[in-house]
Image (tube, rainbow, N blue to C red; front, side, top):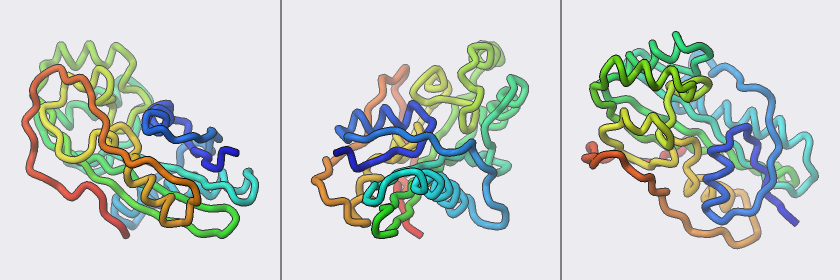
Length: 219
């Protein structure tokens, strides 16, 4: 019996869990919801992840362990959201060009039988290079930035813009797998869980590390 349900529409999160050796099934949550107002970005991203888990937990059998996540990019002017048009994508990427920004991924684990739940957030910092207008035009024209947090995919063509990363790469992709496994353990997941390290990406250039950050905090 597969006890874990991933409440996600993201193929990137599915791939990360699969690569970690986790057996799970998929149930898509409702469409993305807006970040709650009046709270910090760290708390907001966890609350959105929890909303996804709660929605899916109502549709599965008792004893199911629901795992969900949400990711936001916080630029110089605040959270950026996901661009719906090429013009929005271009504006977001221009805001990040040559600067350092923060990526937050909130994770929720919930057991439908015991009503136990745990929340956590993982933080990584990303520094963009000062890419050219031509490079920006080509990337936007590729369509990849659309509906991506912060208008880029670090595991795709967006990696060409990345000069340095501090923290976990999987946080930037959309799921800190190590944090997710710890949260499952905290709510009493009974089966052995693998130990996981951050994934490796094929880099297009040698990237120097940024100043170290704490990669996972709890609220």
